[in-house]
Image 1 (tube, helix red, strand yellow):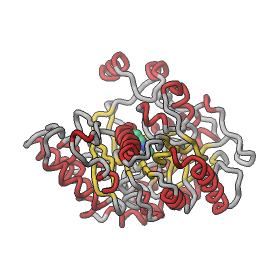
Image 2 (tube, rainbow, N blue to C red):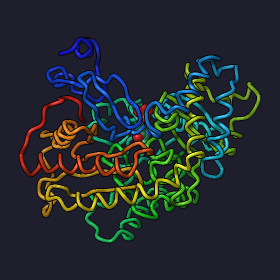
Image 3 (cartoon, rainbow, N blue to C red):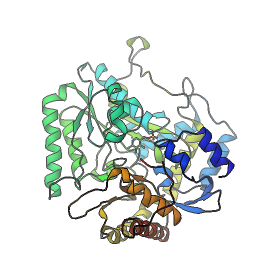
Image 4 (cartoon, helix red, strand yellow):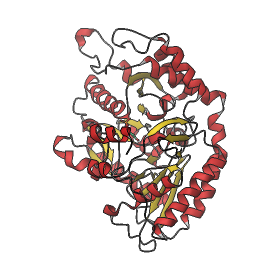
Length: 458
Ligand SMILES: *Cc1c(COP(=O)(O)O)cnc(C)c1O
């Protein structure tokens, strides 16, 4: 064990990690990263097949982003947004509003996805208080939703394994079914969409007077295992929330910044939410930064004199951090300069083609794709749809096997997640998915074992 690995094991408590297993197993220590490649202390290299947990967009050490941060560092790293404006935050806010769906006009900065969600929930709640509809205090959340790990965002979450234990601490939203077609017993996609929307409408009819907002991960329930919503679902949710006077909060933390093949997932169904949360990809994966975008209607409801007590009393120490905002500007400039979104079409088609081969494997139940987001669901018995025993951690074992072959990926349960940086070339995508396929075959069909990286999985 090298000294850094020893220090890690002695001092660090890792997120989402069973530390007993972590400490008992050999672990990879990263020294640097460039492009889509990670380098470790043992001289190994790995493709970054999950974009460093869904954040990296243009690759590591992208010269333009490095330069932007260095230049900003020469001016200042951070000054507070309480009582002071700053240059990069102002410029980035304008760029975000221009890139965002129609109607989102104001940017409230915070630090990560969970805080962006907290801000949206509190804004939605307070908005109705100012509007005099004081009974609108409840939220609607989707089964299987994931919106972050703070108490508010866990309250609107629905991943049992992560969230159940905290139940006594949470506020209780109304739940609607997860729009996961693969897991439904229905055969027809349009019928399934209608079924999901009917459930929402039934709830809204009865309870809209007490509901402030509905929060949704548009198109993809990511942490639940890349569950893709059926076509027409998101736009249906928008139509119904408008009709029943409920704010729509789009959590684009995972889907934003090109992941789905458009800048934001909402664009696929021409949806403009009332509030939108962004984070992960906002700085190109460089620095922690988040934003909650709001409509003028919401923003204006908070205007008044100090004495009217309409101020939004929320903020974080590092809100509107200059280094993060400088990285964000550089990242959005690369989107424009390199025509990144246009360039995704052929990459997305390449992934689709590769997935056909993976879908046909005997222990792959489903291989779902939305743009550059892929979830490959492992299954014990494909015909009878019998899953693996979750304590077997098949997903984690397959990912460890892939790591032996030079690809870093991480599962959510038995779903192998593949979410490469948008800058990955078609040749690199092919290599990464070939490794994934090989690892699945070796573990599920050939019964090989993987050098354990225990603990590093859900
Ligand atoms: C990751 C994620 C979050 C939480 O973001 P953090 O930066 O980890 O707090 C919230 N919502 C969605 C959809 C996410 O995927």
